[in-house]
Amino acid sequence: MSARVARLARSSGVHMALAFVAMGTWSAFANHAHPMPAPLVAALIQGTISACITLVLKGMIEALARHLAGVAALVAPPLIAFAISAIVLWIFHTIGGTPEIGRTIALPLTSSASYSTLYSFALWRAKAGRG
Image (spheres, helix red, strand yellow):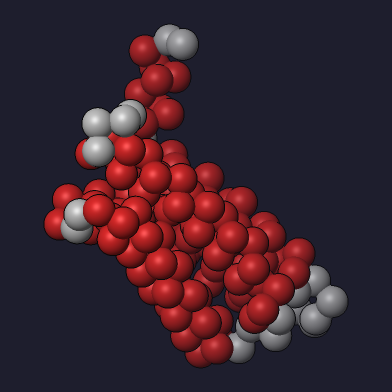
């Protein structure tokens, strides 16, 4: 991998942009049966929240893992990340009038929960000397 590609792969801005496009597109699709501008508004809301969650999630998991021990360090970070993500998504989509909130947030929540669980597991193993 070239140095330029590696730098882009580590860039928070690139990760945020990809999250915005991927989850914003999903949100537009999840709401496509509704008249405009509902799919567009839902896409902008979801894209923005996904970009922000991408920026914050990794640091939050690392901070929780540092301050917790044992099974709590494994279980608490993904549960807290999931709960916060679900609440934030539900609130902003409700305020924004997203017609298909459940469908809209299903994929982003699954994605962030999977990431949170896998990353927490990796940190837990490394902390326990098994990684």
